[in-house]
Picture 1 (tube, rainbow, N blue to C red):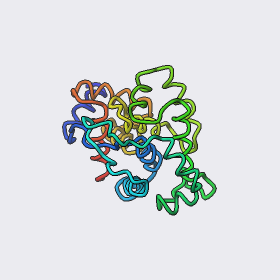
Picture 2 (cartoon, rainbow, N blue to C red):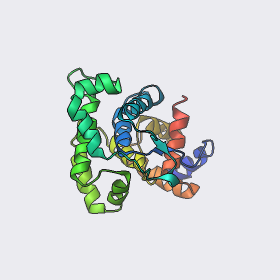
Picture 3 (cartoon, one colour):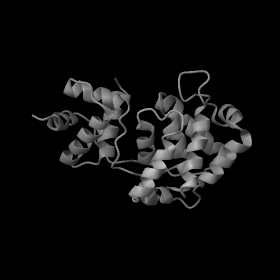
Picture 4 (spheres, rainbow, N blue to C red):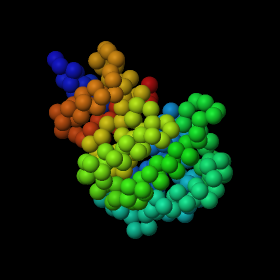
Length: 227
């Protein structure tokens, strides 16, 4: 059996399910993408996003895909202005109540700074809302130019953060090859798997399973966070 076949068989034990409610504002997608790296998602990342939503007066932070866009979506310019007004230190402590940094180093930039830079770069490429992001994802040349700029923000790592951002913004064809996904693949295949290999194998496996790459990625993530 080839490796994709092994993954398909192993995925039979996963809970594959359609995408549920997701962030209805690009600003919350940016916060999630940046703050979820090397952090406990339910304990730290989700509360951080909700604290910002409450503080910013966002009444509907989550929505089903069929209900998007929401009428009062906050443009990324407003998110950037909030951080600039407070400064990253105060924004981290007082608004987000989360002072995590982009690396396990006291001198590393705060994740709030990385989130601001992400948002500023997206705005510079004409991306302010979820609808703008969806248009970007369909424009290969513009997408690659945007990705080159975003890759320069502290904490880029292997590229999982950027892939995850596109998933959060609505791209169900993406795989987020983070440590939990790689760990699952390594267990199934009994070998070390690179980020590029993980993306290729899981994308093909999703096609054979007749599910989206997002659904397979998320099912693996849900499985591994219980380990």
